[in-house]
Image (tube, rainbow, N blue to C red; front, side, top):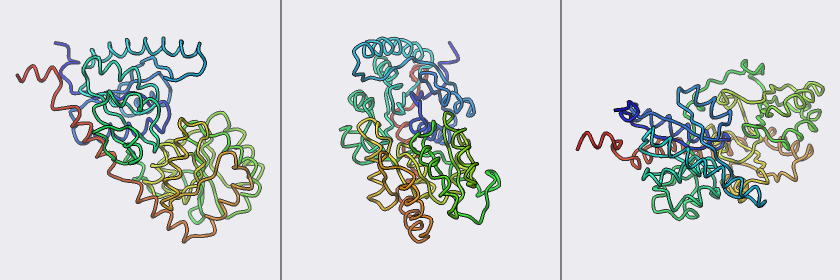
Length: 376
């Protein structure tokens, strides 16, 4: 008998962006804490971020072709259908080799062919949904899924599933465990620290606002950590240097928890990563990505704003003047920051990863098919 068949496994599908990947990583790590005998595997369309993250954790990452499930261009639609057809075929082979007890779809189109293959082979599927408005892939897959772990009650209602558990958004436990070490970033412990983080690839509008505002930001008693993405790192660093702005500039913050540990407030997108800020109690100025599917980032930001944890600034309205005004509002009012930080922590749901992990283990069942056969 193949040694693959003697292991208990859960396969996570998707994770192109940090907002989808890191909740899956948090759940995977929590599953292994609860059940060390379970092996975690990831699969996706071969993007560098999930490959790197899985490698650091000693998890296998498998390539499965995938394409967005919705296209307006007819030729792109045909191309996407062909890629996903190949993806389903590849996923069926992978599932037959690994024999996982469960497939967890992290969100995003990469999970689509894997979930279809899983249902063909009678492998249960669990959806992770990070947003107030579920993404198209999870909405399409919801009739096929056995359960879902969702961040917002609104998303549970939209998915219309009997087993949609509102867990909050799973956050990696290590994010909240870093000491406040300013020297890592060459910054000072006695100054306010702002964080600009536009997601794993950065955000052009946030970077451009920082570039334009840099001379005036340098006049405030605030130092900065700026995650720019690779494409605009040099441009932001040049503007920071010319303005004399005290800042640490990085294409990608790894580990980002070290930055969270010293940040007094953040300027950020409002995708799945918003809950990482919440878990760390960091007040936010949210600038939703305007082209997010179903405008889900705006829905997320509104939920945080309604709770008094964040401000919302439309992407089209973000310029140097607006950035300065919002930063000044937070920097000059410590009581406001404290109230917003407390509201953030209330939304953070520190037990979200454990709740989602327990749901995953319940959905997976007690044993692999091979184990069931030996125990019969």
